[in-house]
Each structure stands twice: as C-alpha cells, then as structure tokens.
Image (tube, rainbow, N blue to C red; front, top):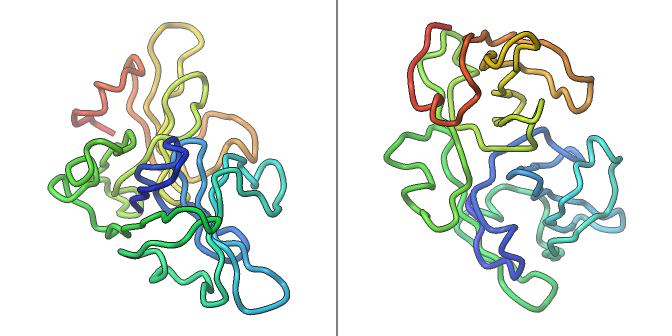
Length: 203
C-alpha cells in the first residue's frame, strides 16, 4: 500500500498488510499504522492513521495521523486502491494498493523512490508463505526487524560473540515475549548488517 498526501510526512510511504484489526484490513510501516475503524451506529466507518500498536496497548479509536470518514466507507480494500479520500475535511490522502505478488521491477522503491520504506524481498524459501516483500518495523533485540503479514524477519545476536542469526518466524514477539524462535529457519554467523540482506544464504 502506497500512501501520499498526508500533511504529516512521516505517514507517507509504503505499508504492508499485517494482522487485521477490528475484523478489518490493517497495514503497517515502521511504527505507523493504517487501519479501518467501523463505527457502531451505521454501516460506515473511518480509515485512520496512528502510531500506536493496538495489539500491545489495547484497541481504540486512535487517529494521530488523521482519519477519513464517510457513510460509504465500509472497510473494503477497493476504497483505498488508486483513490483519494478527504481526511479531516482539510486535505486529501491518496492510496495505491500494490499487488502481493511483487517483483524487483514493481516494488514501490522504484515506483515511488522518494517515499519508499526500507524493505526486503525474500524469495526461494521452501515454505512459500515466507516469500514476499517485508517492510521494516520496530527493531527487535536492538537490531533490524521486518514484517510481512504474520511473518517476521529479524536478527538475533549471539550472547557469546558479536555474530548472530538472521531468522524467520511467524510469532509476534512483541505480544508473546522475546525468544529464539525460527519456524521459518535461520542462517548463522552473520553480523546483523542490512547489507547482508542483499545476498543468498544456506538456510
């Protein structure tokens, strides 16, 4: 999801789909969130931006980055696909929904180089669900951490040396607690530098 036009520039950029909130779509870019918040008195609702991780802090009507309201907004992805929405009756925010089947030729870094977030493309994993485009989120273990839906790519330092492991897993450690989890495998004796993610590894 590409977002442009937010008056707070920190909310503009490339978001990736994460766990649904309020039984509706939710996207994440670093510590920023785009989600649909249904109201309880009609079929409509709001598309909202905020910087609170509601899976940790609790769910509520938060919109530090603004909101777009409309009786005709029902939380369907088509509402934020190549369309602009009036936010706070003050300015328009425009959206572009990017296909989940991304390639190096179509990723937002090439389409929108001025606003693209840090991302990593994982390919050739034997478990297809781990292949795709990951966007940088909150650091874990004081090192880079990337997310794609319920999948996580992160660096786990070894406590006995300066090296460590790049690992893939399907647990949100901000919710369940931090641990050495690697359902999607790992590669070891690397340094945790982002440049290492531009290579192929035995996994």
